Image (tube, rainbow, N blue to C red; front, side, top):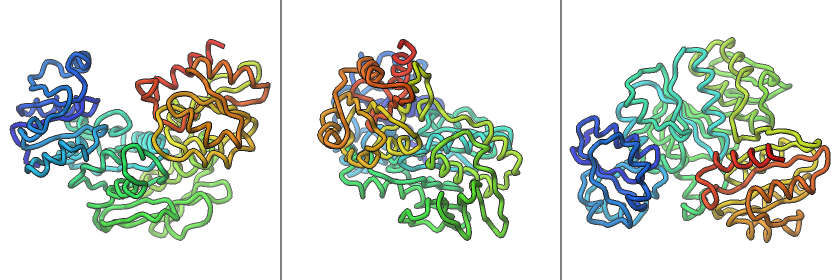
Length: 441
């Protein structure tokens, strides 16, 4: 990639800071833009390690954006902001941090996207590949910006990256050797104008693939593939001539005339959604020729991740589970489907524009909903006639109320269906707060 001498970094999240440090290390002159004030960002700016920069803080101005030949966006920044549209019209090249990083990468990239399950699947594939090859980079939307792989200069045989729709909006040449699309359900309708626009962003993961590459897609998902990859399916119900499927309690893979299978019981992960995650991971392993022993050890050893249907503790026979990562309705629905018994659901947060009505299908197992945050009113209006629903002022009161109406054998599940930014910095802080409240009971 031809990188100009002056670059504007927009958005000072982890990706923006990492990109700024990397580009400064190449001798580039860096501009930083963020709608927050410089005083508010003081602690964040310390993470730059003293590199020189020109700051454009506070409300965005078109002249600041037009003053640079290239803009690198952090994924949290809407790529259709008016100032960015104006910059493009003025001839400014606008890319994302992931596209910048990919231009320096020559190793095979495995990219995972989908509405739900991305982080679990990315981490599991990372575990398998680490056992097989000794070293691997796992990053992207999972929390470690891809540009860090380039900046560190430590080469690994494969690069495994979780990819969000936001990151895919700004790709130009990004081309994974294997691209995995786990699922697509309504999400981020607070950013996209329609569900169709959100899906189109996801499908971009396949755009630059060629016949040497692989696209792994859930069976029945009508994805639009503009590249020319070899397409393989996976499904948790029904047999496939080629791909990965679940049959008779086993994870099965058929590829190039070879069939391999593993007992589903090897993995402690529960639920049909995790069966799908396992299918994609095992299929990816077979594509890259990984030995069955390494796969088995990884499946057995991978215990899951924090904030994903994570058991916290049992109090007086009531079990508490932290599923704070469930930032959309489909994720919460999958968590509910994986559980048996009476469930008291703590849900709510920053509303993302989708409907909550899909939860009505699980009404028979939900004893009550404690709704919190900005979305509590919508949750109550859409679900209150089918499921007893009440308002909680904050996480502490929601946990206390859930515990007070629970009896031995019940489950209290935090599965918010919403993003966390109305009350917390992120889903991790939300889950940690829930855990502390439960530990204090």
